[in-house]
Image (tube, rainbow, N blue to C red; front, side, top):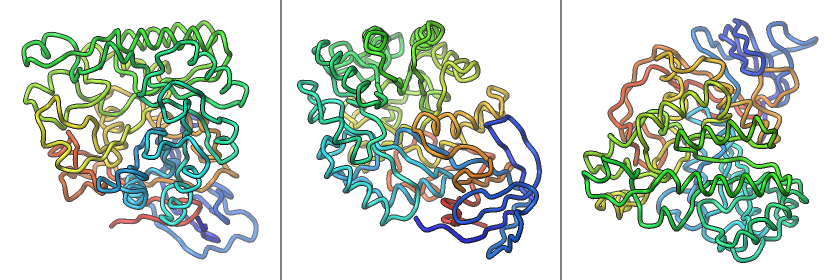
Length: 429
Protein backbone atom coordinates (compact mmCIF):
# COMPACT_ATOMS: atom_id res chain seq x y z
CA UNK A 1 0.00 0.00 0.00
CA UNK A 2 1.71 3.13 -1.23
CA UNK A 3 1.95 5.94 1.31
CA UNK A 4 1.80 9.71 0.94
CA UNK A 5 4.96 11.75 0.96
CA UNK A 6 4.20 14.49 3.47
CA UNK A 7 0.82 14.81 5.21
CA UNK A 8 -0.02 17.43 7.84
CA UNK A 9 -3.01 16.84 10.14
CA UNK A 10 -3.99 20.07 11.90
CA UNK A 11 -5.79 20.81 15.17
CA UNK A 12 -6.81 17.27 16.14
CA UNK A 13 -7.58 16.03 19.64
CA UNK A 14 -4.83 13.44 20.02
CA UNK A 15 -5.80 10.37 22.05
CA UNK A 16 -2.73 8.20 22.62
CA UNK A 17 -3.70 4.94 24.36
CA UNK A 18 -0.09 3.86 24.78
CA UNK A 19 0.58 6.55 27.40
CA UNK A 20 -3.02 7.44 28.36
CA UNK A 21 -2.59 11.04 27.27
CA UNK A 22 -5.05 13.31 25.49
CA UNK A 23 -3.86 16.57 23.96
CA UNK A 24 -4.56 18.93 21.09
CA UNK A 25 -2.11 19.42 18.27
CA UNK A 26 -0.80 18.46 14.87
CA UNK A 27 0.59 15.27 13.38
CA UNK A 28 3.27 15.27 10.70
CA UNK A 29 3.58 12.23 8.45
CA UNK A 30 6.50 11.46 6.17
CA UNK A 31 6.62 8.43 3.84
CA UNK A 32 4.01 6.41 5.70
CA UNK A 33 5.37 7.02 9.21
CA UNK A 34 4.52 9.45 11.99
CA UNK A 35 7.48 11.81 11.83
CA UNK A 36 6.55 14.17 14.67
CA UNK A 37 3.76 15.47 16.87
CA UNK A 38 2.90 19.14 17.48
CA UNK A 39 6.15 20.53 16.03
CA UNK A 40 7.10 19.75 12.41
CA UNK A 41 10.38 17.98 11.75
CA UNK A 42 13.19 19.95 10.15
CA UNK A 43 12.57 20.73 6.50
CA UNK A 44 8.96 19.47 6.54
CA UNK A 45 6.84 20.78 3.64
CA UNK A 46 3.29 19.43 3.51
CA UNK A 47 2.06 17.95 0.23
CA UNK A 48 -1.41 17.58 1.74
CA UNK A 49 -3.04 19.23 4.77
CA UNK A 50 -6.04 17.85 6.60
CA UNK A 51 -7.91 20.17 8.95
CA UNK A 52 -9.04 17.99 11.88
CA UNK A 53 -10.54 20.72 14.05
CA UNK A 54 -13.32 19.23 16.17
CA UNK A 55 -12.17 15.67 15.45
CA UNK A 56 -10.48 13.12 17.70
CA UNK A 57 -7.47 11.23 16.35
CA UNK A 58 -6.58 7.73 17.51
CA UNK A 59 -4.29 5.03 16.12
CA UNK A 60 -5.97 2.94 13.45
CA UNK A 61 -8.11 0.15 14.90
CA UNK A 62 -6.62 -3.34 14.81
CA UNK A 63 -9.37 -5.97 14.54
CA UNK A 64 -8.08 -9.44 15.42
CA UNK A 65 -11.07 -11.44 14.17
CA UNK A 66 -12.82 -10.63 10.91
CA UNK A 67 -14.06 -13.21 8.45
CA UNK A 68 -13.71 -11.75 4.97
CA UNK A 69 -15.43 -14.72 3.22
CA UNK A 70 -12.68 -15.08 0.63
CA UNK A 71 -11.79 -17.64 -0.48
CA UNK A 72 -14.87 -19.83 -0.44
CA UNK A 73 -17.96 -17.67 0.20
CA UNK A 74 -17.66 -14.66 -2.08
CA UNK A 75 -21.46 -14.60 -2.52
CA UNK A 76 -21.51 -13.19 1.04
CA UNK A 77 -18.55 -10.79 0.84
CA UNK A 78 -14.97 -10.64 -0.36
CA UNK A 79 -11.66 -9.13 0.64
CA UNK A 80 -12.18 -5.99 -1.45
CA UNK A 81 -15.65 -5.24 -0.07
CA UNK A 82 -14.76 -5.89 3.57
CA UNK A 83 -11.46 -4.02 3.46
CA UNK A 84 -13.36 -1.03 2.07
CA UNK A 85 -15.92 -1.38 4.88
CA UNK A 86 -13.13 -1.66 7.43
CA UNK A 87 -11.43 1.52 6.26
CA UNK A 88 -14.77 3.35 6.49
CA UNK A 89 -14.95 2.14 10.11
CA UNK A 90 -11.46 3.36 11.06
CA UNK A 91 -10.07 -0.20 11.02
CA UNK A 92 -6.62 -0.23 9.48
CA UNK A 93 -5.63 -3.84 10.18
CA UNK A 94 -7.76 -6.98 9.95
CA UNK A 95 -6.82 -10.46 11.08
CA UNK A 96 -8.42 -13.31 9.16
CA UNK A 97 -9.09 -16.71 10.86
CA UNK A 98 -8.18 -19.90 8.98
CA UNK A 99 -11.70 -21.30 8.46
CA UNK A 100 -11.94 -20.27 4.82
CA UNK A 101 -12.59 -22.67 1.91
CA UNK A 102 -10.01 -23.92 1.21
CA UNK A 103 -8.69 -23.80 4.75
CA UNK A 104 -5.58 -21.68 5.35
CA UNK A 105 -3.33 -24.69 5.88
CA UNK A 106 -0.85 -24.20 3.06
CA UNK A 107 1.22 -21.26 1.80
CA UNK A 108 -0.68 -20.90 -1.48
CA UNK A 109 -3.86 -19.86 0.35
CA UNK A 110 -1.91 -17.33 2.45
CA UNK A 111 -0.39 -15.86 -0.69
CA UNK A 112 -3.82 -15.61 -2.36
CA UNK A 113 -5.27 -13.65 0.55
CA UNK A 114 -2.27 -11.33 0.77
CA UNK A 115 -2.39 -10.76 -3.00
CA UNK A 116 -6.08 -9.87 -3.00
CA UNK A 117 -5.60 -7.61 0.02
CA UNK A 118 -2.88 -5.71 -1.83
CA UNK A 119 -5.21 -5.29 -4.81
CA UNK A 120 -7.94 -3.96 -2.50
CA UNK A 121 -5.48 -1.26 -1.30
CA UNK A 122 -7.47 -0.56 1.84
CA UNK A 123 -7.03 -2.11 5.30
CA UNK A 124 -4.04 -4.33 5.92
CA UNK A 125 -4.91 -8.04 6.17
CA UNK A 126 -3.03 -10.44 8.43
CA UNK A 127 -3.62 -14.17 8.37
CA UNK A 128 -3.88 -16.97 10.91
CA UNK A 129 -2.83 -20.40 9.70
CA UNK A 130 -4.61 -23.63 10.59
CA UNK A 131 -3.48 -25.41 13.74
CA UNK A 132 -4.40 -28.78 12.24
CA UNK A 133 -4.63 -29.96 8.65
CA UNK A 134 -7.99 -28.93 7.17
CA UNK A 135 -9.03 -27.97 10.73
CA UNK A 136 -9.99 -31.62 11.26
CA UNK A 137 -7.99 -31.92 14.48
CA UNK A 138 -6.33 -35.14 13.39
CA UNK A 139 -2.83 -34.19 12.26
CA UNK A 140 -0.77 -31.07 12.63
CA UNK A 141 -0.44 -28.45 9.95
CA UNK A 142 2.93 -27.44 8.50
CA UNK A 143 3.35 -24.51 10.86
CA UNK A 144 6.88 -23.59 9.80
CA UNK A 145 5.74 -23.29 6.18
CA UNK A 146 2.72 -21.21 7.21
CA UNK A 147 4.90 -18.91 9.28
CA UNK A 148 7.35 -18.48 6.41
CA UNK A 149 4.40 -17.62 4.15
CA UNK A 150 3.44 -14.79 6.51
CA UNK A 151 0.99 -16.24 9.04
CA UNK A 152 1.24 -14.37 12.35
CA UNK A 153 -0.31 -17.18 14.42
CA UNK A 154 -2.25 -20.43 14.23
CA UNK A 155 -5.76 -21.41 15.21
CA UNK A 156 -8.31 -24.18 14.82
CA UNK A 157 -11.11 -21.56 14.87
CA UNK A 158 -14.20 -23.24 16.38
CA UNK A 159 -13.40 -26.64 14.86
CA UNK A 160 -12.77 -29.25 17.58
CA UNK A 161 -9.54 -31.05 18.36
CA UNK A 162 -11.01 -34.08 20.08
CA UNK A 163 -7.76 -35.88 20.86
CA UNK A 164 -6.01 -34.08 23.72
CA UNK A 165 -2.67 -35.64 22.76
CA UNK A 166 -2.95 -34.10 19.30
CA UNK A 167 -3.77 -30.73 20.87
CA UNK A 168 -0.80 -30.96 23.23
CA UNK A 169 1.55 -31.72 20.35
CA UNK A 170 0.08 -28.86 18.32
CA UNK A 171 0.73 -26.40 21.15
CA UNK A 172 4.27 -27.72 21.56
CA UNK A 173 4.92 -27.40 17.82
CA UNK A 174 3.55 -23.84 17.79
CA UNK A 175 5.79 -22.97 20.75
CA UNK A 176 8.79 -24.35 18.86
CA UNK A 177 7.82 -22.19 15.85
CA UNK A 178 7.37 -19.18 18.14
CA UNK A 179 3.79 -18.80 16.92
CA UNK A 180 0.92 -17.61 19.08
CA UNK A 181 -2.01 -20.02 19.30
CA UNK A 182 -5.41 -18.34 18.94
CA UNK A 183 -8.05 -20.35 20.79
CA UNK A 184 -11.84 -20.12 20.64
CA UNK A 185 -12.68 -22.31 23.64
CA UNK A 186 -15.56 -24.66 22.88
CA UNK A 187 -16.30 -28.25 23.87
CA UNK A 188 -17.93 -29.57 20.73
CA UNK A 189 -19.88 -32.29 22.54
CA UNK A 190 -21.43 -29.79 24.94
CA UNK A 191 -22.27 -27.14 22.37
CA UNK A 192 -23.30 -29.26 19.36
CA UNK A 193 -26.83 -28.50 18.11
CA UNK A 194 -27.18 -25.62 20.58
CA UNK A 195 -28.07 -22.09 19.52
CA UNK A 196 -28.71 -20.15 22.76
CA UNK A 197 -27.40 -19.78 26.27
CA UNK A 198 -28.61 -22.66 28.45
CA UNK A 199 -30.96 -20.98 30.90
CA UNK A 200 -34.50 -19.89 31.55
CA UNK A 201 -34.83 -17.85 28.34
CA UNK A 202 -33.81 -20.75 26.08
CA UNK A 203 -36.12 -23.08 28.01
CA UNK A 204 -39.06 -20.70 27.63
CA UNK A 205 -38.40 -20.31 23.91
CA UNK A 206 -37.87 -24.03 23.34
CA UNK A 207 -34.33 -23.56 22.02
CA UNK A 208 -31.46 -26.01 22.52
CA UNK A 209 -29.10 -24.48 25.07
CA UNK A 210 -25.31 -24.27 25.19
CA UNK A 211 -24.04 -24.41 28.79
CA UNK A 212 -21.29 -22.17 30.11
CA UNK A 213 -19.30 -25.36 30.70
CA UNK A 214 -18.95 -25.75 26.92
CA UNK A 215 -16.62 -22.76 27.11
CA UNK A 216 -15.02 -23.24 30.52
CA UNK A 217 -14.20 -26.94 30.15
CA UNK A 218 -12.38 -26.28 26.87
CA UNK A 219 -10.70 -23.27 28.46
CA UNK A 220 -9.48 -25.37 31.40
CA UNK A 221 -8.03 -28.03 29.09
CA UNK A 222 -6.15 -25.46 27.06
CA UNK A 223 -4.81 -23.68 30.15
CA UNK A 224 -3.30 -26.94 31.42
CA UNK A 225 -1.64 -27.64 28.07
CA UNK A 226 -0.37 -24.06 27.80
CA UNK A 227 1.26 -24.42 31.21
CA UNK A 228 2.94 -27.66 30.11
CA UNK A 229 4.11 -26.57 26.65
CA UNK A 230 4.92 -22.91 27.32
CA UNK A 231 3.17 -21.75 24.15
CA UNK A 232 2.00 -18.16 23.93
CA UNK A 233 -1.80 -18.23 23.65
CA UNK A 234 -4.69 -15.91 23.04
CA UNK A 235 -8.26 -16.78 24.00
CA UNK A 236 -10.88 -15.30 21.71
CA UNK A 237 -14.56 -14.48 21.98
CA UNK A 238 -15.07 -15.06 25.70
CA UNK A 239 -18.73 -14.98 26.70
CA UNK A 240 -19.08 -15.89 30.38
CA UNK A 241 -18.27 -14.59 33.85
CA UNK A 242 -16.68 -17.93 34.74
CA UNK A 243 -14.29 -17.67 31.80
CA UNK A 244 -13.25 -14.16 32.85
CA UNK A 245 -12.50 -15.45 36.35
CA UNK A 246 -10.43 -18.34 34.95
CA UNK A 247 -8.39 -16.03 32.72
CA UNK A 248 -7.83 -13.67 35.64
CA UNK A 249 -6.46 -16.49 37.81
CA UNK A 250 -4.30 -17.85 35.01
CA UNK A 251 -2.73 -14.44 34.45
CA UNK A 252 -2.06 -14.12 38.17
CA UNK A 253 -0.33 -17.51 37.98
CA UNK A 254 1.98 -16.14 35.30
CA UNK A 255 0.69 -17.84 32.15
CA UNK A 256 1.62 -16.06 28.94
CA UNK A 257 -1.94 -15.48 27.73
CA UNK A 258 -4.23 -12.72 26.51
CA UNK A 259 -7.96 -12.64 25.83
CA UNK A 260 -10.60 -10.79 23.83
CA UNK A 261 -14.33 -10.25 23.69
CA UNK A 262 -16.51 -9.27 20.74
CA UNK A 263 -18.18 -5.86 20.96
CA UNK A 264 -21.70 -7.28 20.67
CA UNK A 265 -21.18 -9.40 23.80
CA UNK A 266 -20.69 -6.18 25.77
CA UNK A 267 -24.09 -4.81 24.73
CA UNK A 268 -26.41 -7.79 24.27
CA UNK A 269 -27.55 -10.71 26.42
CA UNK A 270 -29.90 -13.70 26.29
CA UNK A 271 -33.01 -11.52 26.67
CA UNK A 272 -32.37 -10.06 23.22
CA UNK A 273 -33.18 -13.36 21.50
CA UNK A 274 -36.77 -13.38 22.82
CA UNK A 275 -38.13 -12.17 19.45
CA UNK A 276 -36.53 -15.18 17.66
CA UNK A 277 -34.80 -12.67 15.36
CA UNK A 278 -31.94 -14.64 13.81
CA UNK A 279 -29.60 -11.63 13.72
CA UNK A 280 -29.10 -12.37 17.43
CA UNK A 281 -27.95 -15.93 16.70
CA UNK A 282 -24.23 -15.87 17.48
CA UNK A 283 -21.60 -18.33 18.69
CA UNK A 284 -20.71 -18.29 21.49
CA UNK A 285 -24.30 -17.41 22.38
CA UNK A 286 -25.47 -14.25 24.09
CA UNK A 287 -25.41 -15.18 27.76
CA UNK A 288 -26.91 -13.70 30.92
CA UNK A 289 -26.96 -10.11 32.11
CA UNK A 290 -24.49 -11.17 34.81
CA UNK A 291 -22.12 -12.55 32.18
CA UNK A 292 -22.35 -9.37 30.10
CA UNK A 293 -21.52 -7.23 33.13
CA UNK A 294 -18.58 -9.50 34.04
CA UNK A 295 -17.21 -9.13 30.51
CA UNK A 296 -17.36 -5.34 30.86
CA UNK A 297 -15.53 -5.51 34.19
CA UNK A 298 -12.96 -7.80 32.56
CA UNK A 299 -12.15 -5.12 30.01
CA UNK A 300 -12.01 -2.45 32.70
CA UNK A 301 -9.54 -4.32 34.92
CA UNK A 302 -7.40 -5.60 32.04
CA UNK A 303 -8.31 -9.28 32.34
CA UNK A 304 -9.71 -8.97 28.82
CA UNK A 305 -7.07 -7.24 26.74
CA UNK A 306 -8.83 -6.70 23.43
CA UNK A 307 -12.22 -5.91 21.95
CA UNK A 308 -12.78 -7.27 18.44
CA UNK A 309 -15.61 -7.25 15.91
CA UNK A 310 -15.92 -11.01 15.28
CA UNK A 311 -17.18 -9.87 11.89
CA UNK A 312 -19.18 -12.52 10.01
CA UNK A 313 -21.06 -11.10 7.02
CA UNK A 314 -23.91 -13.24 5.66
CA UNK A 315 -26.22 -13.02 2.69
CA UNK A 316 -29.93 -12.53 3.39
CA UNK A 317 -30.82 -16.20 2.80
CA UNK A 318 -28.42 -17.39 5.50
CA UNK A 319 -30.29 -15.38 8.13
CA UNK A 320 -33.83 -15.78 6.82
CA UNK A 321 -34.25 -19.10 8.56
CA UNK A 322 -35.79 -20.21 11.86
CA UNK A 323 -33.50 -19.18 14.72
CA UNK A 324 -31.79 -22.61 15.24
CA UNK A 325 -31.11 -23.08 11.52
CA UNK A 326 -29.85 -19.59 10.72
CA UNK A 327 -26.14 -19.07 10.16
CA UNK A 328 -24.56 -17.65 13.33
CA UNK A 329 -22.66 -14.38 13.39
CA UNK A 330 -23.09 -10.64 12.88
CA UNK A 331 -21.80 -8.09 10.41
CA UNK A 332 -19.76 -6.02 12.81
CA UNK A 333 -17.08 -3.85 11.20
CA UNK A 334 -19.29 -0.77 10.95
CA UNK A 335 -20.26 -0.83 14.62
CA UNK A 336 -16.98 -1.77 16.32
CA UNK A 337 -15.83 1.74 17.26
CA UNK A 338 -19.34 3.20 17.86
CA UNK A 339 -20.27 0.35 20.23
CA UNK A 340 -17.08 0.69 22.24
CA UNK A 341 -17.38 4.47 22.48
CA UNK A 342 -21.02 4.08 23.53
CA UNK A 343 -19.74 2.25 26.62
CA UNK A 344 -17.38 5.18 27.26
CA UNK A 345 -20.23 7.68 26.91
CA UNK A 346 -22.32 5.60 29.33
CA UNK A 347 -19.51 5.60 31.92
CA UNK A 348 -18.96 1.85 31.62
CA UNK A 349 -15.41 2.14 30.24
CA UNK A 350 -12.64 4.70 30.63
CA UNK A 351 -11.69 6.29 27.29
CA UNK A 352 -8.04 5.25 27.15
CA UNK A 353 -8.86 1.72 28.33
CA UNK A 354 -11.39 1.41 25.52
CA UNK A 355 -9.09 2.77 22.82
CA UNK A 356 -6.22 0.65 24.12
CA UNK A 357 -8.37 -2.48 23.68
CA UNK A 358 -8.94 -1.54 20.04
CA UNK A 359 -5.45 -0.40 19.08
CA UNK A 360 -2.21 -0.89 20.96
CA UNK A 361 -3.16 -4.13 22.76
CA UNK A 362 -4.11 -6.02 19.57
CA UNK A 363 -1.10 -4.50 17.79
CA UNK A 364 1.17 -5.86 20.52
CA UNK A 365 -0.44 -9.30 20.24
CA UNK A 366 0.04 -9.39 16.47
CA UNK A 367 3.55 -7.95 16.65
CA UNK A 368 2.97 -5.03 14.29
CA UNK A 369 4.24 -1.45 14.38
CA UNK A 370 0.88 0.16 15.05
CA UNK A 371 -1.48 1.18 17.82
CA UNK A 372 0.36 4.27 19.08
CA UNK A 373 0.73 7.95 18.28
CA UNK A 374 4.50 7.96 18.58
CA UNK A 375 7.16 9.11 16.17
CA UNK A 376 8.30 6.19 14.04
CA UNK A 377 5.02 4.26 14.19
CA UNK A 378 3.15 3.40 11.01
CA UNK A 379 0.86 6.27 10.05
CA UNK A 380 -2.31 4.18 10.38
CA UNK A 381 -4.82 6.58 11.92
CA UNK A 382 -8.53 7.09 12.52
CA UNK A 383 -10.25 10.44 12.97
CA UNK A 384 -13.78 10.45 14.33
CA UNK A 385 -16.34 13.05 15.31
CA UNK A 386 -17.93 13.00 18.75
CA UNK A 387 -21.55 14.09 19.26
CA UNK A 388 -22.35 13.26 15.65
CA UNK A 389 -25.79 11.67 15.87
CA UNK A 390 -26.51 9.01 13.29
CA UNK A 391 -28.54 5.84 12.95
CA UNK A 392 -27.38 2.47 11.67
CA UNK A 393 -29.45 1.09 8.81
CA UNK A 394 -28.82 -1.07 5.76
CA UNK A 395 -27.74 1.99 3.79
CA UNK A 396 -25.16 3.13 6.36
CA UNK A 397 -23.65 -0.37 6.70
CA UNK A 398 -20.64 -0.41 4.38
CA UNK A 399 -20.07 -4.17 4.59
CA UNK A 400 -21.86 -6.38 2.09
CA UNK A 401 -23.26 -8.25 5.07
CA UNK A 402 -26.32 -6.45 6.46
CA UNK A 403 -26.89 -8.94 9.30
CA UNK A 404 -26.48 -6.56 12.23
CA UNK A 405 -28.52 -6.70 15.44
CA UNK A 406 -27.85 -2.97 15.86
CA UNK A 407 -29.88 -1.77 12.88
CA UNK A 408 -32.06 1.04 14.19
CA UNK A 409 -29.63 1.97 16.99
CA UNK A 410 -28.58 5.59 17.36
CA UNK A 411 -24.88 6.36 17.80
CA UNK A 412 -22.95 9.49 18.73
CA UNK A 413 -19.47 8.82 17.29
CA UNK A 414 -18.67 8.47 13.61
CA UNK A 415 -15.48 7.94 11.62
CA UNK A 416 -14.67 10.84 9.31
CA UNK A 417 -11.21 9.98 7.95
CA UNK A 418 -9.00 6.90 7.84
CA UNK A 419 -5.32 7.02 7.00
CA UNK A 420 -3.27 3.93 6.17
CA UNK A 421 0.47 4.10 5.59
CA UNK A 422 0.18 7.87 5.41
CA UNK A 423 -2.48 7.77 2.67
CA UNK A 424 -6.02 9.07 3.10
CA UNK A 425 -8.06 5.99 2.12
CA UNK A 426 -11.46 7.09 3.48
CA UNK A 427 -12.97 10.51 3.98
CA UNK A 428 -16.53 11.73 4.46
CA UNK A 429 -17.85 15.23 5.05
